Length: 307
Ligand code: ZN
Image 1: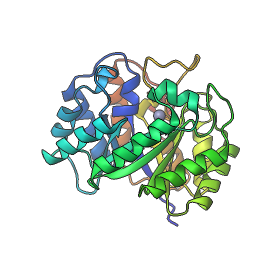
Image 2: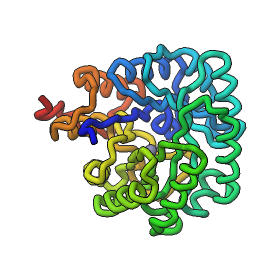
Image 3: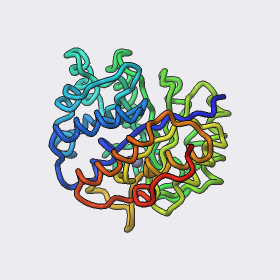
Image 4: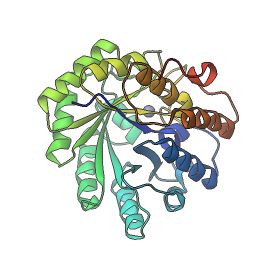
């Protein structure tokens, strides 16, 4: 197994869906191009959510049409339902679709109803329809929300997450993300769950998506790394988490901050493949675009002993 990690930059989707202000398409395009220049191999570009529900991504097609792509880079679009996949296919036929789409399920009924407006059974039927609608055009990323605990139901059984991961695998999905949607994971539960899913469904490449709601995000990433995970999601400035209209209690909601995660891995001797000078410039640019200081430590302190 390689030591190197692949970090997916999630600012433009997971991040921006939490922002109340609509960022103009040209600014989104310029940011995604900057992420490509930093060297990210996976970039979450947009979502085909219903624009009436999530207005931040009303310009999904325009953004995908406007970005400058690099070969071998995956530009992901989130797809909540079959209609969303149809839009991805239409953009693909027009020559500017995503090359990766994510399909969402929640590990608990309460979160599924609240976040997806759908029971788990209905959402799994949706996922089957989405896989069929995708026509083999995209790399499919199965995403399991609240895998490490649910704000409404508390503990989530590992068996439920394993069964969901296996169900994705049975549909031909080869990449599955375990999402810690409200920051309830600990290093111990992170390591245990990734080890359990990897053992039960070894054909999957697993992706860690931690939120830093309670300050455990980086520790959980190290624990997942020790469990063999080499794919991580994060967002510059730690923004994002979930749609702005969903409230899971108070406090910070966001993702692990990309610049902090990259600094930690590089200082540990774990290669990220990223341009570290461009990384810091881009971290500051993300703050300029949103007009405020974001939740990164490294954007303030600068990089540590990374060389
Ligand atoms: Zn997130």
